[in-house]
Length: 99
Image (cartoon, rainbow, N blue to C red; front, side, top):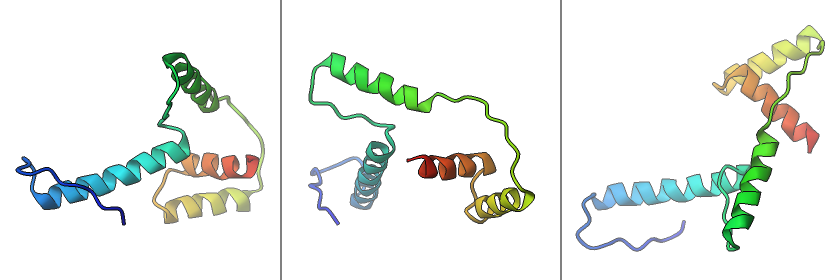
């Protein structure tokens, strides 16, 4: 675990600061990994370009195709097991297969 410096006389308790700083680090790492956060050392134009590229990856299009019932039921079962929406689970599963 990474260590953080804690400011003297904070308005939050030390436990609250530790909890917040730990979660913030995790959230930043996740955001960088999934592309929802962008870090750029370059000029503003490069940052804007990176944001536009990320948006392109987020564009959606309707797709309609037939799947065997056992596949659909398995996907629904796995989504429910993970307590996530079926459509989100299917999108994530397809995204991993597309890479």
